[in-house]
Image (cartoon, rainbow, N blue to C red):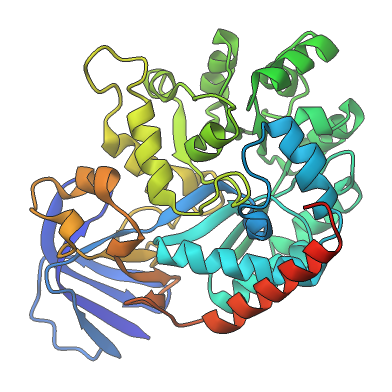
Length: 424
């Protein structure tokens, strides 16, 4: 399959210059990106972009997609109460069928927002992988094993799902220090060393979490993971809201990824990550929505905007972080930690994970600085097309790989069933 995009503005994210030209896709790779040509060879489809923008897709660097089941079912609670009295009891009732359908609902929202991959931590992974494969969506799974289970199948799943399909990958990790015993963390460290793999976990999301870890071990979560050897081959942390000076040093030393989740952190009153310090320290930063229960949206544009403007909170009358640094984190930096190193920039030979932005949308006009305007004014309304692995999966408001009416109907039926079981 060869597709030719003509009459486009192009933002490769190799740098932030935008130029007029065209882009060709052959099968699942970018065949050409550059100035317009007089090419007369055969294409299966030619798309006139009419001056709209082609750019790398967004990659949601931390989420729990099947948690769409809990959207607006447990609002206005702090993290510990939200998790222990609402989310964990209901999650215990979820079946593989629940995860399959609620994952598909999440994928619909991702595609609408130009998101082509999600660094997802959840359970019933077979169902989630099936939903991804059927939808043509990239599923970069990270293990959330903890005291409630998951360690016994960790190595088996690591081997199975890294050989599942070209849309599915599996990364080692655990839920969080406060839900995982020292013995299990040591076992995970052994696996990380056996396969020379990175490790990811929720890290320093709340003051209570950090204080509890210090009380148990005399160390912050970051220090504990470092001492256990969990970061010997890299990795990163989700949230990273309450970090010490030494935590930052460990992130620098190990070249770890810090994933900020501003909407979730604000909604759960967890705090505000110091994005400026991460950037100033040269630490890689990306952005995730977290789950729909704590956000409540999977709209990555909201988190991109908040991550940028919240970095100014500690400022004194001037912006602290270049918005293009965070746009790069969302499009090109995050995937390099998610086993998606070829799904970053628009360049010949790279994977064709591409979105088209409607520059004629009122929020994108007048055209002054397209890239920064995406950060400050972008929304799902400006996404005209989402392509994953060379296949268009969302175009002009239509889902091409998902029966949206079926998914919505099924999810409402399942949530009514769950409510009958109580807890909400």
